Image 1 (cartoon, one colour):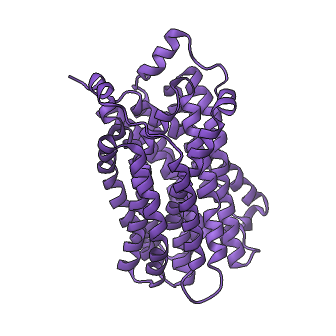
Image 2 (cartoon, rainbow, N blue to C red):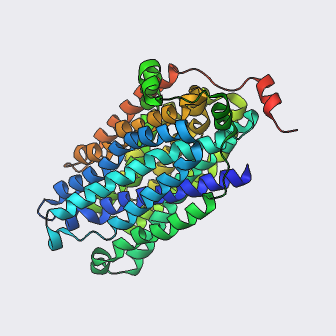
Image 3 (cartoon, rainbow, N blue to C red):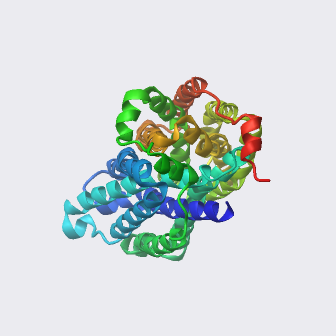
Length: 426
């Protein structure tokens, strides 16, 4: 389990490094480089628009790779998704700017961001099922939470590189070539991830499905016909997590640097510190889920998000590093109270023969609902005025309440003690 969990964590860290480095670049530099004819606000919105395309592609990636995972195994998904995302990310670092090739530059950026999202849409389902389907029932949430640490590691890697570059280079150097370095580094990381995953075994549940001839021939058709309500509920339930995370990790960077005059180095440091604590807390929250259940923690995380959004915006508006960090930390702890749990919760909600498609589609559709539009909506709501952007807080609170309602309609899936005892290692 340690080897499997490590491989899943490293893989998701690499893929989310690719995904997050684009979000940070969109917040800091892509607007003026690829949309120079726009006003500063319009350029930022356009850059966030290309950022959003990655989320739109993720459900399509879940359908494509979910079919592979349910028909041919979880293991092939881990290779194909990592290869696609890695290649697309390296290519982003090679795209000439608008000044060099004109309108072709943002179009290429858009295409490559779509391919990034397509690959990431397949990664989560494969990585989570690799651990969840191998894990003993009484520790399933704990082991399945390791892929959920990957996004925090990927974020810290992406922003750590960006922080070093913005601190070590002049603004002109960073805009000229420095922002490309993290995208090129993705190629080395992807090669290392593929090597690590080369020795992984297929999950026991998929092997059992193959041996019994019960694999789904058309998993998406079954999902749409028989489980559409579950998919919509899980997508709605998880939307708040995406909204909160990308408000902190993407929109707040732009707001802090452009509206509050805080340096990008300070903003990145505050966000990274909060993300580091969030990543460290993940397995401890998962242990609580193995003890008390999945649904109670998800409900608690939603409620905490709804209560914390106005304080978070107020703390951000102070432009004081410590207070901004505390605002971000409260938001991300509420976020991880839900997202440490869902790596076990979502697979348990779906039967094994359609699990790779169902869990991944619900997870990534939530990204469209909560993550794709949030930086754009937040940027629009925070434009103008000198006071705190209360509209952003109100928007996030409404999303949290909707997600709370969706979680309330989902069942508990905690294995009963007899199942846990039978599955636990001697």
